[in-house]
Image (cartoon, rainbow over all chains, first blue to last red; front, top):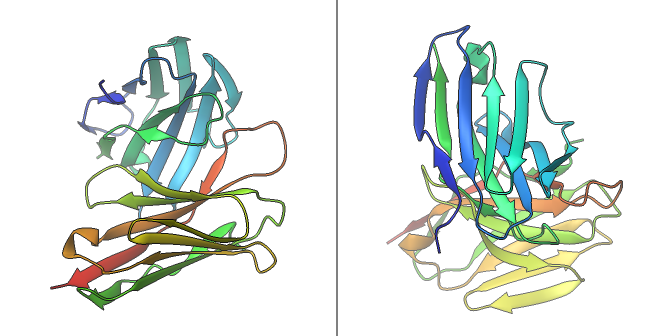
Length: 113
Length: 114
């Protein structure tokens, strides 16, 4: 069975541009999480969904960030406009039921110049 | 005080030795604790979970929890070079309706020397 799929794996963009990160959770999983990892701040939860509904978005840094989950097999994280401080590795993770065991995707390394 | 604290390391141990990784947390009501392993350039993977005080063993790994001291540790016996990675401690929040919230420490980098 395929794991969590993320695209793109690497993204380099210029400040001010819109960036869209994509995630396909493991089939059957009903929780989906978006994390950001940097050396300074470690791994931070941005937002998570249960059954496609956003449950907690308190980790979203500011209005420039938005996330959607239109169906059980797809989610997007959008940054508009992007800034150099958004440079990080963004992970998507999914889990089943209790949200305890989270399976992480390979991540998207974002560089904003 | 940070919610989950770990010594960033690097922790260097010789092959075959016991590696001891430590983590403290601030939310006294936390009930669930996890250790994730993250190889350089890869994503985190769950290796151990522990929910009650005491020790939990799985192969060469032992997780230890002391809720009174708000302390959780991971012991790796017979350390191998392949264990070289960053180990992330994660704690599940006890409050609110956010059932999925895991708070991660910044991780301890372990290096096992042949």
